[in-house]
Length: 128
Image 1 (cartoon, rainbow, N blue to C red):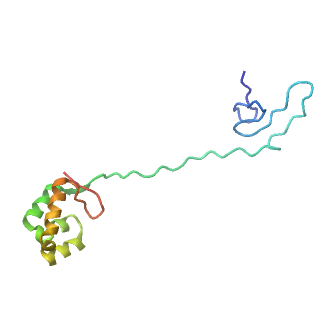
Image 2 (cartoon, rainbow, N blue to C red):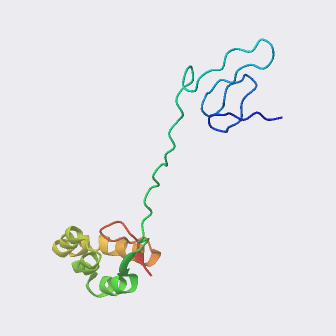
Image 3 (spheres, rainbow, N blue to C red):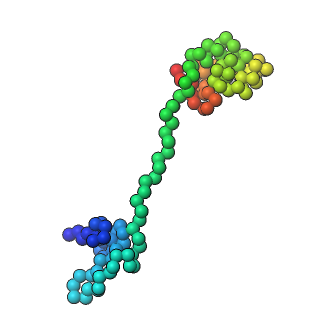
């Protein structure tokens, strides 16, 4: 048999204390104590609130095309055209003045473009 709290309607524990609001139920029988007024000797009810959920990014990939980036990499990659296309102006200028980091950066970018791990200036992967 389950006893409900008169204050909030939650279940009363075996010790006579409400599990939710802490209201004390007076003992039953001839040795009953006088009733306890709500709020005296019991903690106030806990406020109900919701925890805000983290925002989920709407866009999971860059709006830039991977095939355009590959074409720019093939034709003008040593001048950093694919870096400029991805929005990485600093890397584009570095490639422009060093001819694709002497060819080493050009090769590394080619591998990352074909593997699908090349990212734009915001860190989003370039879409297919």
